[in-house]
Amino acid sequence: MKRFPRGLRAISDHARTVGVKTLVWFEPERVAQGTWLAQNHPDWLLGKTLLNLGRVEVRNWLTDHVDRVLREQDISLYRQDFNMDPLSFWRNNDPPDRQGMSENQHIQNYLAYWDELRRRHPNLIIDSCASGGRRNDLETMRRAIALHPTNYNYGHLAVKQAVHSSLFQWLPCFGSNTVPVDTVNAYAIRSGHAMNVVLGYDLRRKNLDYDLLRKLTAEWQQIVPYYQGDFYPLTSDSRDEEHWLAWQFDRPEQGDGIVEAFRRQNTEEARATFHLSGMDPSAKYEITDLDSGRSASFSGRELTEHGLPLVIKAKPGALVVRYRRLSGAATAMAALETEKTRRGLELNGTWQVEQDACRKRRSSPGESMVSTP
Image 1: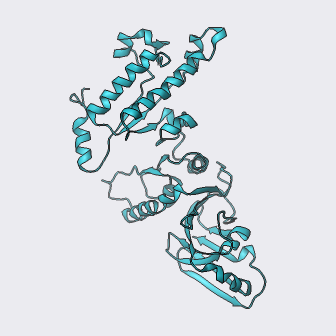
Image 2: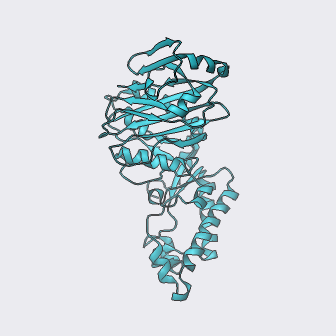
Image 3: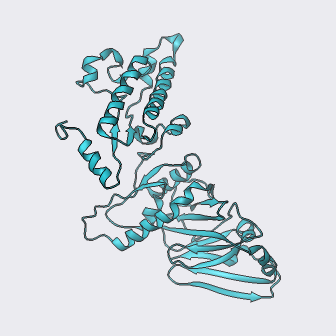
């Protein structure tokens, strides 16, 4: 209040003039001593700390209060945090034969509170924070997104990759960040790929590689639409540094998709083969490396049955490839039976294409390679 005695409206008004929406961070369920609620309604608190949303009058007051703030300050994004463990407060409020009732009523009214906010503000975006991902349950995620889905060590990139691989299977939208921010690193930025990304770089610094930062930002903008496609994990979501991790997003209507792969710090194998899903076996696909922009074609049958072998020479290193189905590819299948094309992609060079005509054997899994230094 000392910093913004007139509220946040001047900030939100200015933000709208430049096309930016305002997010305000709330934590209504945890009440600090000495605040208005603690002084005026101690009967609304469990253990002098937890706001008892199980009471309808409490929920109604909170709804009206936050509704007024959103309207008066023109807030577009409502973030709700929850930095406490409420279970003991609920249990201590219930008699032995009614254990669970306080929790049940609290959660029902917490969801009803959000439903009423959304009814009053149809365009409101709710961001569920809750100590970083502690409320990523299905009912919450039906009503909100998780722009900050975890508080785990942001710099542990293998864990970040594994968390994203897991969340991709459940959530259509979540956020991420980039760490470290004192240097521009392709592996770090790609490890943070998600539907929403915060680039925490201090743009006043003169020693950052801004050309690379622009390139990687443009790359994320190019691939983020694919995150609305069908998700296929190509590996387990392992958190250790000894194994590759990779995933695929496929858009069947458009006939295209992306593959993102990570070779971790202690992964000995520079090469891994991934069997793609959603491919039309009778079609031909153009595979494009987003680092070099070079392309080559593969059959859908080859990508499905034999897989797409990837080579990442750097340790750690990350690779992003995009594919699209080529028109008229079905007629090319006969030629693939009699002509073998070996392709190798060097990210610091060019597509190398060799053709062995009249070889009537089928392609072996090891003869197609995408590699990065």
